[in-house]
Length: 60
Image (cartoon, rainbow, N blue to C red):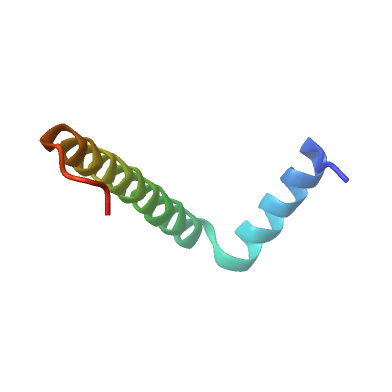
């Protein structure tokens, strides 16, 4: 069952009431930082695999 815009607004209001605006902002910042680190790790892993293939070493 899809979640509509009204349901999302209600959930957001409940989260704001329970945790407060400052805590929610802090959580979103941490989530964004975690996603950025995850993407960075993916790029570094891809670069390492590419380097291994270019050097002629077999994949592990």
